[in-house]
Image 1 (cartoon, protein in one colour):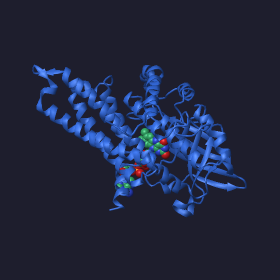
Image 2: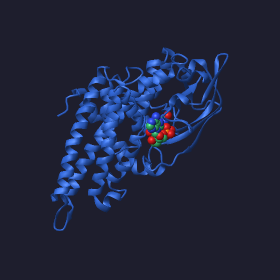
Image 3: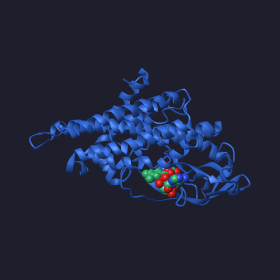
Image 4: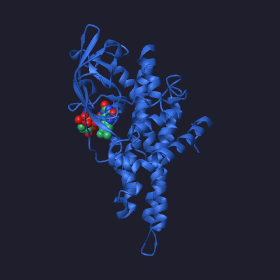
Length: 375
Ligand SMILES: Cc1cc2nc3c(=O)[nH]c(=O)nc-3n(C[C@H](O)[C@H](O)[C@H](O)COP(=O)(O)OP(=O)(O)OC[C@H]3O[C@@H](n4cnc5c(N)ncnc54)[C@H](O)[C@@H]3O)c2cc1C
């Protein structure tokens, strides 16, 4: 029995489910083959109020993070891993909302809310991921412009992106204090997209390289203060990690239900797989563990709704939920036997899609570093 959501969140859940059933689930297999979700789906989601859910009108739908959480739970439950809505609405748009000027908010957020501008955030580079303060993309100031040079990789929504928050060095000598966040729009001369990267999972999700070759943008495209970008990133990454934890918890629950059903139906040596003690004990352990994960993640969600979630708690939630997801989905796949390895069974796809959860948004090792510093 979950207590974290209000009635309006649950009504929104119904709306999200209807959208997914109509506009997403029937087409997702094709998008997995295409390696991309069509832009039109974003526009439809915008029209139906499913983007920028947590931002006030006219920048978003006037909800709170609870609405975002409900939507991402439903997307996870549907196995619609191609939809990069949460990154757009709950990660990119909040940077503009929190650190942007009124003029910047008016310029970009209503269009993001309508699905007319697809958002991405470009932190990672070929040479640096975990060590974010070592990014090399450089924004050199020339009068009232920045000239950006550099390369980014593994960027979610990158190929479709129409607006990108780029993590740049404005002062390469100043380490973390030399990092700034600068917005680059599609069509700006010198900004180009590389190939869609071929991944082992998340096949429908667009992940791309981005290139910046003497890209000139007005100084007015910088979010917040020059040199404060690293501090902004550290603040916002807590929400990104909570999002990943919420998805991990939902993925375990969904796959546990599917595995219960499968093992009750499938027979070996004259009896359902479920009746073997090994199966029942493993599923019992899984039920106990996912309950623990859910309670802690909901606790973090409740804290976050009161703006009280700390970066350390978010790191704990991401670490424990995604490590549990990796272990449990592997056990569930094993219980499906050969069918577990077939793409048409949800468990195989969920298992491979889950692998990245321990890597992106900060690896498990980085989560341990964050927690260890407080010991
Ligand atoms: C599908 C996908 C989508 C992504 N989307 C985005 C996106 O939208 N935007 C974006 O900017 N990035 C994105 N990323 C990048 C992702 O955040 C990075 O891959 C991740 O942060 C790890 O960085 P790295 O790949 O450079 O690994 P590295 O930093 O090179 O790490 C390699 C290994 O070393 C370990 N390691 C590193 N430092 C330490 C340490 N101090 N102590 C112990 N171990 C350590 C790591 O844990 C890891 O196991 C995405 C990645 C993937 C795979």
